[in-house]
Image (cartoon, rainbow, N blue to C red; front, side):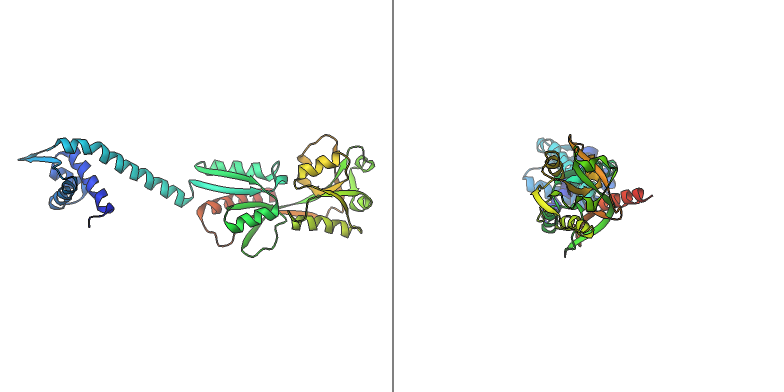
Length: 302
């Protein structure tokens, strides 16, 4: 009965008695009887090794030792109260750190909308945003280095939970001087003889295979002459004349000089974006983000 928990009770009893300077009123405030309160104070005095109160008929006053202890006791109780409030906020998902991975092509589109909505609802949460391609995101999610991720064409990975967010079509990425740039819609088959700039398969195997699959459906195997990890770099290499590319429609918001984006046919070819998290992770912070993402997906569907 002489541990830290009891010491907090003792400090609380001490501060209340120091404020009331009357055992009866202090006991009433504490919701206890006078004898247990007297025991608490005696135990605290035994710890200090000196009396904390002068007791007289009908009156109580602080000793110099009691006056010295009072501000420290108040600070200690305040610190515990602040810590308890902070712990409750973290446990409820209203505070803490949320680590979010995202694909670079989502920076101009999906990401700002989700971050604004989340911050409006949960202003006390600190966000750590990391730009990562699909494969590193998946690894970071499974290792617990990320809490949630925004992925393009997420893989079917054991231990990874995925919720679709949206789908979008593909655009042809062309140098502005390319003959096909004069068209409003470019058939994918018209790119058959062109050199391609694509993402490395290792960084995004599913989206890479999806693009290659679109080309194969059009009757050809893309001839890849250059690879780049980020879509902005892909577009820059296209502008420099290295080749052409197929990219998700949102990439057209990367407005680089010398690059033209054109819709493709057939229009049925789509690429998907999803929010992902570690399967079985039921912590409130990721759950709050998933709820915001779900609402954003419903809004886009309307």
